[in-house]
Length: 530
Image (cartoon, rainbow, N blue to C red):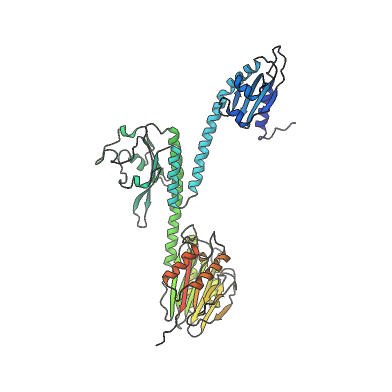
């Protein structure tokens, strides 16, 4: 049994079959078959022929025939999606090939038109889905609403478009913002926000799409004081199209698209369809972005609520920072702590829970509390980390945590242990920089033993603890980031001011860090001589 040809070969085989059949219709005046040659045509040769929307059979006139082949006596040109082929006869022929071409054209003309219409519809659907994929990939609200407004305004062919959307602030109060496309913001900045007039109400209330060939003669237009229509200086609007943006999850009206054009009758059923499609995708994207932002805000506040204000420590100058990720989803998990001990010593802690969001922030809170509790028992750094590691091992969900823990005792220096965290930096009074605890143990939740080391920390020295958000990002390699930190740390003033600390973060991150940053800077102050 003969197998069917691959589907990718069928169009070519069908075209060959059509060319063979048409070639057989060329006959000499006596009815015998006439010799025919196939000639593939270049694009410039096809350009001079009548248009058939890219497919069909053409019968060239005498001028076109001479341009195809000066020796030709007759020809047919077959166009398909792969190009064009001429069937050329160079001997005397009858008109049988013309009759056959006309019959084929009559039989397939309706089909070609239907295929052409389907291709147009497929292109519209594909374009709409492309816009949808792009919009639903957005999590940044500002970029989302502007992209949606631009896409919708272009799709419907409006002179300008606007997207009014609702937000809820941290106090539960609702407010409305808007974006524009096609005109500068100054074109509308002096006008008040639209009210629930008869024209705008259907959109803001989610009652459905409103389309008017000329809104100025619509029965709903011009009934509201003080303008009774468009205010002076407003861009002219005749054609009007407005579509509600409604949340698919709870039916809430999230906002509305409004499109205008100075000429009447510009918006069609197709434009309405496109606007409603983009509004649907925008609603899904807005739901996602608002949920994402809500979790970011909750995680940010949860993390901040669990972080302390560093207490003043006699003889030490402290600067601490916790900066949630300014871009991306990586919020939660980083922390620091400064713990005064009853003995007069001070513990310094920096750590990072692997993961992000509410789960990481919750784990961070438990680990921070545990470390603080063991620290207050005046346990050695290695013992503090060992006990906390046992606690982390017992969590319901496996996790691991990096942590650098150090204790400064006046007159005795610095004792420290590291559980898989980035090395602390110690800048000596003479400018020499040392790395403390570099790759000496595994994280909490993985390792069980955390070797302890000591070093001097005399007046004039600086200690810097930090998390990886300061030195690593999607665009910054960790090794490169650490080298850059060493360079910048060497340049910092003594003692470090809050402004200089912020400048360090700005320099290393460029002002856009996609992960949390926690930082503890300690300067051992030099006693003033009297």
